[in-house]
Image (cartoon, rainbow, N blue to C red):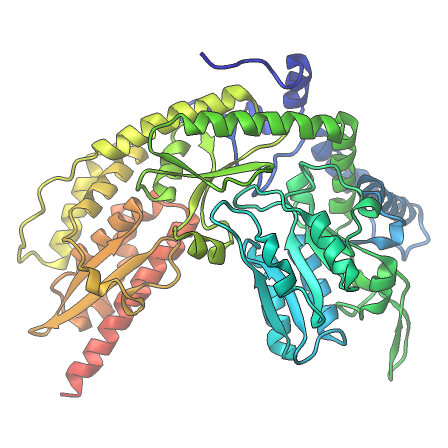
Length: 570
């Protein structure tokens, strides 16, 4: 029997949930929504929706420039939003709050500034192996452009930073430390105070990626002591397209402007420009005014609930979720750090995370699957990705139980799927094979039945030899790993293919079976997309999988083009 002791009074939790309209909708099939994808983006309370409607309906005008009533009203709302953010993170002054498009732009702003004057050949930037691509790629680019060196603090198998190695990586050539406060993939809460103290001893500034910390932890910039802190509005129940860069006034004054344009200037002549004071110096052009006022409303909502209460409740919920998930046979939790917040990552047996997530969606459960924009971390852990369930203040223990029960059923469904006998080779034409596919998929009424059949087709692929599992045969642009080996015999094209995700394997099976035995010229003249559309394949997959399907088609066409040219040159 499960422990049902709530971490917060049920009436308070019910009131919180009642303010989020999305939680009360019914999904196709009359399924209730269990939303566990909060690390990607949180749902929005009605107060934020209403605030955006009011702004656009009654208050909208451009800020800072107009003498008329609406412009002043919009400016007041925009600058009050800045003060709200400053209070929320306890910045020393509102001048230290820069509005950006999100965490990604905030980090790019700092990276751009360091590129111009603070980084040179032989200098070093220290990041960690668990960083989101948004806190890795900007620094790779900055180092490439300046000749600086990117150093990476390692991560243990438990998903914790190897602090014992910090002194080896942090030294006299370090110009900046940039790290995540809370891992978006593992939920690990990093010992950022320890790292900040070590960096300060060497007079090295520290940037914290706070995208996953802001929704879950109490924030105090003056106590924390970091030099930069970035987070996104859409992860703290606010609008998309708005984010925050906090920076100490001294460092922000020292950095050059990130972009040029209106509102960030003091004077402009044909020869040169001078720049506005903080924070306008970094806010060129018309800002996302509605995003700022919507974010302020979201932060006020969080503050009214109480960040301490949110942190306590979510910690209890996450502990309960990890305990319940461990009870499921074949589940492996990924990341066993001592301190967690927000998310738990796991694998279900040998199944590809995407296949698990797709089946969970049939139960109305929204989770995230894949590498979570942390590909180097996945490579370090030796896995293709994970299933990630991430929590917010409106999630419940009952929803955790729904997830666990569904995972048991998903595990059993995936293990019981039995491949049919492989079809015997035929001399059917491409048009005849296409007609067969249309008829076979037409036997099923429900999309989920069609997806199951698509996965069965993947099971019918011939075993793929390990000697071909190389980069030369790997198709780039697919969310899952897809391998394709193309052979040219007697003027016709033949394929071997495989994937580590069941539904992707089904897609490549349809493609190769459809085109098997055709000439390169026929393949190049065939509208493959149209054939797949009439079969109904695009309707069964997500937008990301459609991108992968497109990459498979391009690879097949490229191979056919090379073979056709080779044949003509003989």
